[in-house]
Image 1 (cartoon, rainbow, N blue to C red):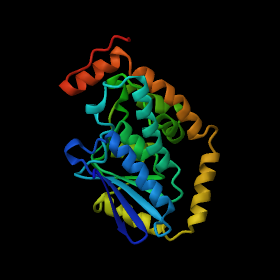
Image 2 (cartoon, rainbow, N blue to C red):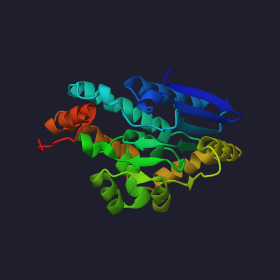
Image 3 (cartoon, rainbow, N blue to C red):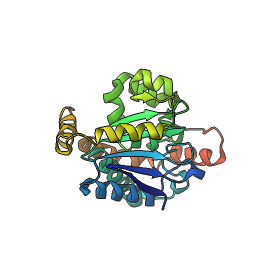
Image 4 (cartoon, helix red, strand yellow):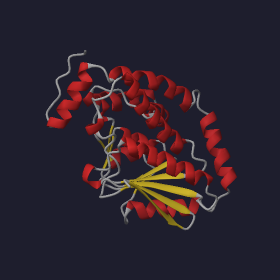
Length: 256
């Protein structure tokens, strides 16, 4: 299993466990994560969840080793599984806290953004790296970023593909806290245990209200994203980006 589940009282701890790949998630892991959150949603003994990564990193996004080999139908399936995973977290009726250290990039950052709260270690670094491989952000990243920091700052973050350190993330309101007095996972668990003391139905209804407060639902947004990514998957720039990433060289995009 590349995703592990532990329990600490009423708190469940879900850990992405591929440290050799900075916890890049595979197709199989998309299903694992969705299934775990689906089961926890129905588990009355679980009142809050911490999502974290093993080996000093949160998640480096989708595994590039599985990219660049799909036709449109296969890529649509990849998108359905990606959205299933994101919706399982975003729609989860209990508080979810991402405990981030090290790398949190691409769809890995989307995973964190789908949580209710993010707490970060001082070494955490965030990046919308999609542009470097000829993709637009997916897994709801733009939907979440635009609401957290506003459209203009979100565009700058996406278009530049630059790295954002923990201190800047805190200033921008992209994380709740930068934890300097101990392991970020321990801090997240303590926060989750505190929230687990609240009324479960009240938390569930509050989450529905946060969703309703937005002009467009995540489901509506994802229906647009669903069409964009498979089209980009067929471009020469995407193939070039993936090849460059594998060769660890600078990509040369042609706009085709």
